Image (tube, rainbow, N blue to C red; front, side, top):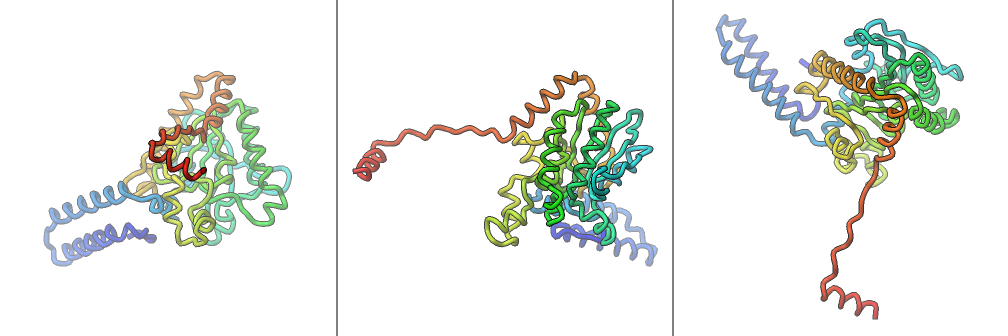
Length: 337
C-alpha cells in the first residue's frame, strides 16, 4: 500500500484495501476468485484514471508536491549514464539544492542542471527543501558557460517552491544572481531544453528556466507565486490556497494555452510517482526529440528565436467598449450636468 495518500485518492485506497482482503481470503480458503479480482483491478484502474482526469488546480499542486514523485537524480539514474556532478560556484560555496554535471543521454553528451529535494528530514535539510541560495544559481551559470564552451546542449529539470527567501540569500544578493542568469541564458550559443518536473515556483524556477523549449509534466505547475503566498496576500489567509491556485492559472493546460510552455508531457494514470519508469521513458523521448530539432537550427537563429519567445510572453490586447445606448448616454449627460 502507498505510504502517502492524497485526499482525493482515498476512494482508490479503499478499493485497493478490499482487493488485498479478497486475495487474502482466496488464499486462506483456497477459493478461485480470479474473475472477481480482475474485475476489481479494472475498476481501480478506471477510477484512478477518472479521478486524475478531473483534478482541480489545487489537487494538481498537491500531486506536484507528492513526496514520492521522481526527482532530478531519479530521472538521471534511470535515463543517463556516467553522470559526473560538478560542485561549487567558485565564489562562496556548493549549494546542494541545485546540482548539475555532464552525462550521456545514449550517444550524446548533455549538461544536466536542476533543483533537487530530499526524501527525508536529513535529505531536505541538506537540499534546503529544494530552495537554492544565490550560490546555487551562480553554480548553475558556471556549468552552463562550461557547456557552451564545449558546445554541449543544456537540459534543466525544475522542481522548486522558489529560491530561499531568508536573510542569508538577501545578504548574498539572490535577486542579482537570478537576474544575471536570465540575461546570460539568452546569450548561450547552445540548445537549452527546460522541463518543469514538479513545482515551478517564482524566480527560483525562472533562474534556470530560460530555454529554446519549455516542457512541463502534466501534473506539475509553474507560477509567479505559490498558492499559499498568493492567498496570504489577497485574502490574508493561507487557507484560501485552493482558490488562489484556480486564479493563478498555474496548471499545465493553462500554461500551454497562454503560450508560457511549449509542450505538456503526459503522466501515467495516478501521476509520475505511480509509474516512474513510464514517466522516465516519456521524458527521455521528449528530450531526444526536442534536442534533435534544435540541432538543426543555426546559432544566430536559435538565439533570435529564444529572445523573441520570451519577449512575446505576457502580451495582451484590449477590446473597444461597446457603444452606449441612447438611455445610457442620457444618463451620463444628466450626471455630468
